[in-house]
Length: 139
Image 1: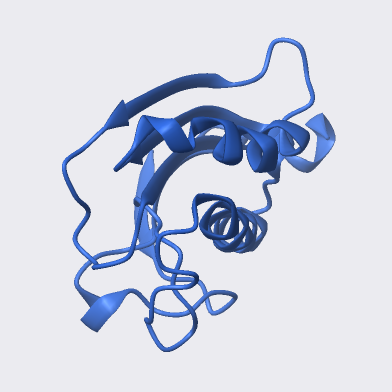
Image 2 (image 1 turned 135 degrees about the horizontal axis):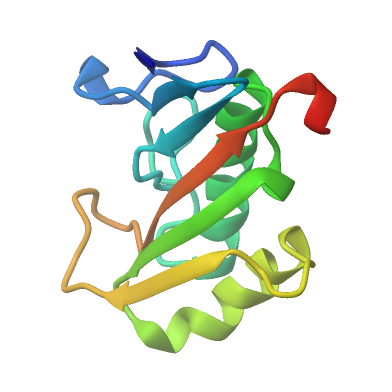
C-alpha cells in the first residue's frame, strides 16, 4: 500500500496549503480517494454566490470533478458523499444539482447533516467525497 497526499494542479490550492485536497491510498490495481471537504470558492479563495445553495453546489462539484479527474476517477467512481449544510431547507436546491451527477440506481451512499455554520462566511455547503480510482482495465 502506498499513501500520497495531493493538491492537483487542476484545482486551486487549498487555503494557505493547510490541508491536502485528496488522500490517495493505492491498493492493488486501484486506489481509494478521500477528498477533503470542499466549499464553493473561486480560484482566489473567495466564496462563490454567498448564501445560494444551488450555485454553491455547482461550484463544489466542479472542484470535486477536477480533483477526481486528476486521479483518474469520475463521478461514476464515487462511493460516498458527506454533505454539511447550514440549513436543511436548502436540500431541494442542493439535490437538484447533485441528482443528475449521480443518475445510477442506487446512487452513492450519502450522509447529510445540518451544522450551525461553516468556516467561511457565506458558505452554506461543504461536501466530502470518497471514491475509487479503478485500473484502466476496469473502466
